[in-house]
Length: 90
Image 1 (cartoon, one colour):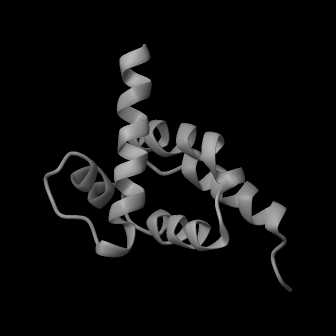
Image 2 (image 1 turned 135 degrees about the horizontal axis):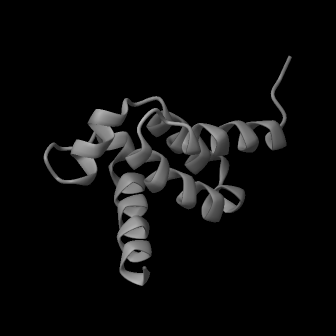
């Protein structure tokens, strides 16, 4: 059975908010809420790859402590920028 586009977005948003670490919930969750509905299929696929990564690697990549995988680097930089902008407004 094939997953519908609506079900995929719902699953991805839930996975963005329920990562396992609160820090990544607060980075990925708001970005997903604001952007997932408008992403192309290719960008959704890239985000799916990003969601499969563990939180410790994601945090190291976001904080610049490690080099991100090339397939997620551009998207991760966009997400990190969005998170920084959100924090500046608080």
